[in-house]
Length: 294
Image (tube, rainbow, N blue to C red; front, side, top):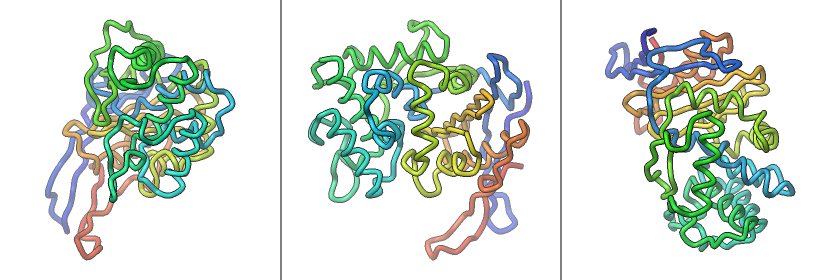
């Protein structure tokens, strides 16, 4: 097994902290590069959103690209992102009070939660299939059973092999080996409905996260790529050549994701200079150090 990626946090010239990251790249169903443990099992968290959007893409082919993109997003509650959530809610049709994510922002509103686009997409899926929407976030609801089937199919695993738990926004989240996550992203565009999901993400990278977001930066820096991050240091991406990548920062530190991803992508021939170094700033906005892979 190859060594994990080590990401060092320097304050001035002194290394203050280190984070370990595991990464794997899959192409044509085969692991072509690995750092650390590509078989590490962890929760996919919000990196699963593009896969969870597949049944929506199939059931609602009339949706505008912005609406489909925001269903894949972990947004920053920017005005343009909230407009996209409301566009998807209107298409569902559903109201903001139907969202079962918690409130966020100030004043607190459900639509401002960074997963509100996914929840709006799930409401739209419920409307398309005639399912009752109250409780759509719960594991025994048809919506979440559909999500389980979709993740298992994309990752090529049996549904009963998927460990599940409750995600931060209240829906079901799924645990997979990193190699299976990379495979799912490598296959995403070839799955039923995946071409529309990938096209929407590429057309609107700013909706997927927003300024400074690792996934947004990668999609803007490398033409043809899609990427989606998740909480606790997860990032998945896919290139136009059918390459799938999954990265997990072992201790869940989000600040290490960009440098770890950049380091790994460089080893497979796709450098992203804008992600190599993340600044460490103080409360005055001064740059006092950096986060970079060793």
